[in-house]
Image (tube, rainbow, N blue to C red):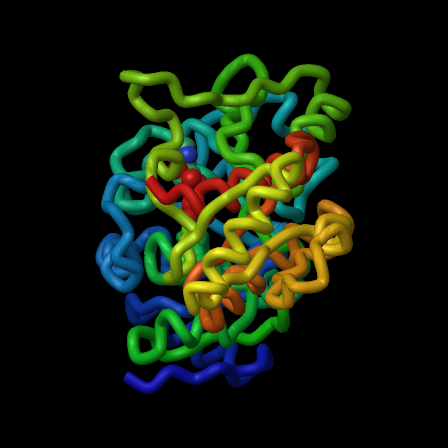
Length: 333
Ligand code: AMP
Ligand code: MG
């Protein structure tokens, strides 16, 4: 199969519509990462997504809809706080989990009685979803466990030959996957952190929990238990407070002929001694770090034998989402 990267216009949308209605999958941009979408009502199309990615078949997918789509067609109950959050943050990088009506393919939620729904704000994603006027089940458009794609080229590198069309919407501005929020209880609970932070949700609706997987417990968001976001080269992680040890690690590896790179934020990069030449700089602000994270991990794996990630001590706000991804990328379970 020949894989083409196409700008989003009437021709590419019409071709994408034919592929989706024929049970195929199309990669499309969102403001978080690129998605690999299929018709959520079509069981074999959804199953095919798991095959293309090599995704474990108990890791449920998020259904994407355009901003005019009535989600009551898909879910049985939307609590008041969820309506409030939707009014404030959607369209945007927030996925909300509801009790499902059970009318999409059972493969979407891997047998769970809930459904995760997202309304992306990316203009290209909205055009694609509006054109189809269908719920589109879409995980990130990468081979399972690899670094998520934030450009059409990243998608091509992972899925060339496996899909026909990648809709090109430029580089994703968000850079990390959506916040996943359980909206089935009395108050919302974060299952995966992202750009819509706990602080933002609390400000809007007062209370917000955060799910932490306890040993021996059945996981509420199956994606949490898997290796994720990992570059193909070796990785190690150091806290910024331990910068001297990170630099020693770099030097000893370089002396042995290992192509080592330090991945860190801009302020840490300034503290590195001059002999550290190989730096993957994530930028200054939390937003910039999220924006650059996957691009730098992919750049790193193309150049380095070893990525030495140095992480800031801060772990709230958007940084929580960035560190969650970086930790999973480096300490791959
Ligand atoms: P990905 O598509 O790789 O961004 O992953 C989707 C994330 O959403 C995973 O962490 C899933 O566990 C989570 N997810 C999707 N559907 C549900 C659901 N019904 N209940 C809880 N988590 C879900
Ligand atoms: Mg993914």
